[in-house]
Image 1 (cartoon, rainbow, N blue to C red):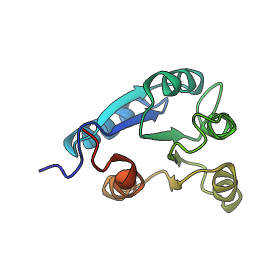
Image 2: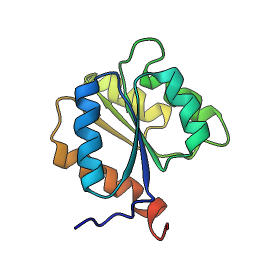
Image 3: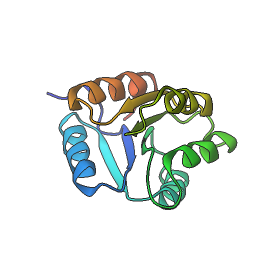
Image 4: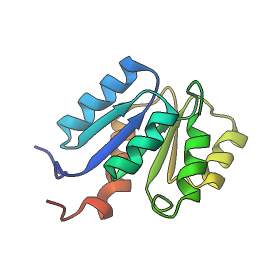
Length: 133
């Protein structure tokens, strides 16, 4: 049984279709609405249109990567407080620090345990999605 309200919306921006499908399936089972976007430029557009409750950003995408998307989100008043989890293979300490310095709410290094990512997503969205209908 899901503990999340289905009105809690997660946008996934990742160019790895198989990973995105896995995340989408996992999140839908947990009761989330999910939108998948394959690149950073489209993610910025869709975030402004859809107003998700959380964005899960791949750090390394062709074109605009997740770090650049995060930079744009934090600079815009309408998205400056939007929760963002960076999900990336960039696991060096300087990358993690850079992600948090840019304003990421959490940072998960690939490969990852799906259950751990789901727990982190639930934690980040708890206050924002509680009581949504």
